[in-house]
Image (cartoon, rainbow, N blue to C red; front, side):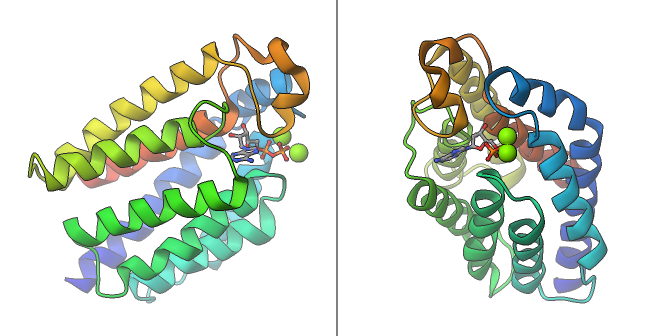
Length: 208
Ligand code: ADP
Ligand code: MG
Ligand code: MG
């Protein structure tokens, strides 16, 4: 019911905010290798603001939209409009509540928005490289294998992890890391890494 969904969303936001805070230094280190050393600080600022502004009484779609808007206004950089704008956009998938079907619609809409806005495709060494296999795996697990959302999410996390490994091996074609050309090879992408952490936290909350 809606109370349970609201509680789960709040728990998810808290878990992600806590993880981002814990990984702030690590994400910044990753960004210092191929960017401008602010990814951890950007995300931490945004998720703290999202926590402060979160309305525990809001309906699921409004809650997610609020988190997205907070990220858009506080994260900044390339990742703020991508994370925040995609969340705010995809939030409408939850207008009728959260279930297996609407979660697939949410994931697809989130991925589409990220790709539209950033113009990156798989292989450009961005968050899209973690997100794309995660969303496709989630959708396939639910719609074709007909497994429970929790199992599907667990497979999606594994797919995102392989996506992050993939970013290490390739050269960046989008974002600040692309300025380095071939020197970007050998470093994992910070945004793909933070995407993986967020998915891991969603899985953790969903398992409870
Ligand atoms: P900035 O690069 O502006 O300092 P952040 O450090 O917060 O912003 O975020 C960097 C991350 O944003 C990258 O690691 C990458 O995953 C993601 N990113 C950058 N440009 C794009 C893009 N065009 N499309 C998708 N993701 C992108
Ligand atoms: Mg940066
Ligand atoms: Mg920056």
